[in-house]
Image 1 (tube, rainbow, N blue to C red):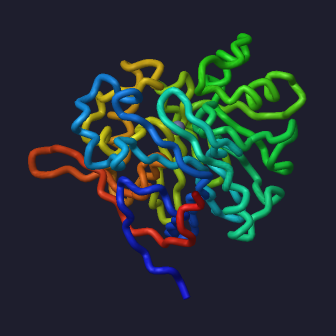
Image 2: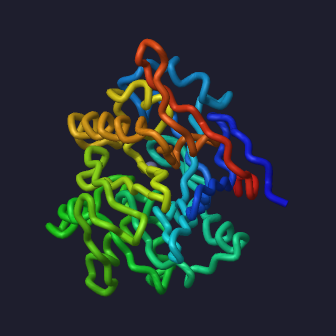
Length: 299
Ligand SMILES: [Zn+2]
């Protein structure tokens, strides 16, 4: 029996949720939880604007993981979570490390992943790319944008707490193959890169298009919260280029407002799948869509 489709709460950790449309199946393979203090992570925004999303401890609950996409006979993983980590960091806390177990519960082995395509090279999106000095997904092509790699190619191994140093150093060592793509390139048939810079230099969204033309846009950290759909000028401390990120958000809002299009926001609490809708005044909001709950939040 298929699990009942339901809408979760924006302030809850993400469950393992699935949507299917036409020939596409997409599952949020959750790695765990990130908690953020909004006054630290969104320092220039009104604190009370986050109250409805916060726990009683005053923290925003975000999740991290990857989007497993099955399309046209291929298995693509968009982003690779954090890896095994339970710690506090500058913006809040991390409790992650469940992604491989979630994949296993779905009967997906690391060997089954054909492509690992990351939105950007931050710790909560590329963490599982390597573990114990080896590729976690041995048969996968590893892909990200040329713009994202450019600063690392110039010798920057990643600074601060957002860089997954074990991943950057492995890639920079030359011992691991990877592919660089440009805006608009096809990753596999049905999945195309939309380079959406601003959060990082080459941050990339992925547009997954079914055989009838319905689209799912996995937009990574172009939006960290559904609140930014309504307030696209609200920056997080992790956004590197405010002008670029605002332009990117407006471009994405235009795409997400097109017919037969919905989005995936990995950090949107337990409402990762949704549409962008406008009211009579033109104000846009994130409208979560029902998705099947395959398993509860792993942490
Ligand atoms: Zn992130």
